[in-house]
Image (tube, rainbow over all chains, first blue to last red; front, side, top):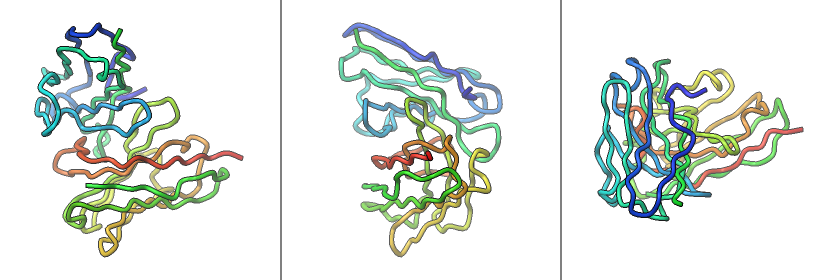
Length: 110
Length: 119
């Protein structure tokens, strides 16, 4: 059971907007930055969003992040087939030793 | 930036393995590094992190006392010594460039190396 809770799956059709949620507590998401990672099938994770809503260079502006209280969301607009991947949120963990990840959300493009 | 892991393989329960991660394309000694693992079909789990000079290191509770992270800045290489291996340590192990001031921030990842613990 992950400290950060994500829905196991999400889906959408090409062109649609989808959102993936990440729920935590006051000691992790509530008081720290949230990060999002995209993991395409058979590859290493890739940083998608940092500090709640910042995009690294090269990440399309179709991807956006937000945070409110103890929850965060990743939104993908103009959905494309190549967005089909697993998405993970991350934040500082309650144990004070390191970060924690959400359980991951598998996004399917129908 | 390139991170290239090696050292994975099949090991028996109770055995040991040492993973390596060769880094290039950035000033290795200036950055913290970390190991993150992913069990087959499962999500990501942070394992350990080390500061740029190697003076500070941290571990997940699941590996504390069994794994040791270290680095050789003269060789631009990160290590993970894994002792007393258990079946639940079976995973792909990724090394990643890390930022202690931004926990959860892994901006570059290697391709991973598979560790299988089985008799």
